[in-house]
Every structure is written in structure tokens, then in C-alpha cells.
Amino acid sequence: MAQDTKGKRVLFICLGNICRSPIAEAVFQWVVEEERGLEGWEIDSAAIGSWHVGLGPDRRAVQTMKKHNIPMNHKARQLKRADFGNYDYIFGMDHENIEDIETKAPPAHEAIIELFGKYDPQKELIIRDPYYDDDDAGFEKCYQQCLRCSRGFLDSLK
Ligand code: 4NP
Image (cartoon, rainbow, N blue to C red; front, side, top):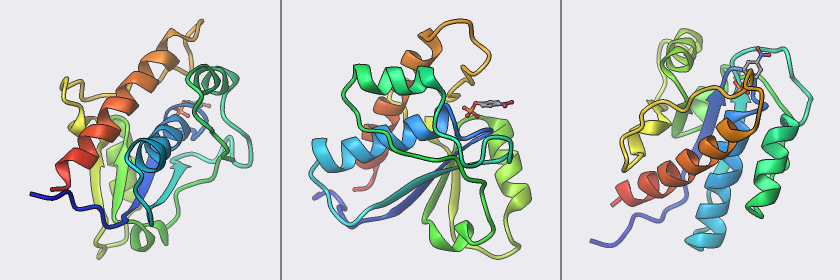
């Protein structure tokens, strides 16, 4: 069957919107546009918390994306009610994200709320928070997971 390439609206969520979700956004955008050549997608990321609103991603996230030649241009923003009407998919990185997203959701909405890791062909369900790590290994791992999940999600739309 042909792939459903109709553009969808996808929002990535993590706690602070400076590590995991901006990486997921950048990698997914790259896979959609550069690797698959798809058009008409709306892709963004946002935070559960407000601590880092207006700031760019963590420098280790920036370095990791540079290493892989993936453009990343994002300023942290907080998840808002309107997002539940503006996006088809809202992806969290861990179970706590999903609980927080569901708590913020209005009673009636059509957005599909899921773990991004659900689409990992290697079945690694959780994209662990590397923010408190002493090095950047967790950021590289986050990138690898996001790449697999991005491809896996697009492959699932058939
Ligand atoms: P993120 O990582 O949710 O992947 O952006 C974090 C960033 C900041 C904090 C926690 C996690 N924080 O507590 O400030």
C-alpha cells in the first residue's frame, strides 16, 4: 500500500523543551523533509514546565545536532490548551510527560497523545532525560532514538 504522505501536525513534548523535544522536532523535521521529501507537515515542540521558556536548546543538544548536520532552530515554549486542537499527534518522551500532557488536555480534543518511543523498531519505549548527565552520551542516544522513532512513525502511516 502507498504511504499516507498527507501532511500531519506533530508536536513533541518533554519537561523543559531544551533537550529531548527540540532534538525530536529537529530530527523528525529532517527525516520528513530531507530524507523522505514530504511536504505540508507542521512540526513543533513544547515544554511541560515554564522554566526555560524563550531559551534555545541545551548546548549539548546543539552540539549533537551539529555533529549530525541536522538544523535545529527552536526557542522553548510551554504546552498550551490550543495545542490540543492545533496538532494531530502530541508525543511525549516518558510516562511522566504523558501524564502531564493528559492533565493539561481539555475534556474534548482529537489529538492523539502517545509515547514517541512506541514507534521505535528496537522497542526502546522511553527517551530518557539526559539533562542531568555529566557528558553528552545521553544526547547522542536521544538523537539515535529520535531517528529510529521518526522513521518508525512515518512507516506506520500506511
Ligand atoms: P528536557 O530536559 O525535558 O529533555 O528538555 C530537561 C530540561 C530541564 C529540566 C529538566 C529536564 N529542568 O529541571 O530544568
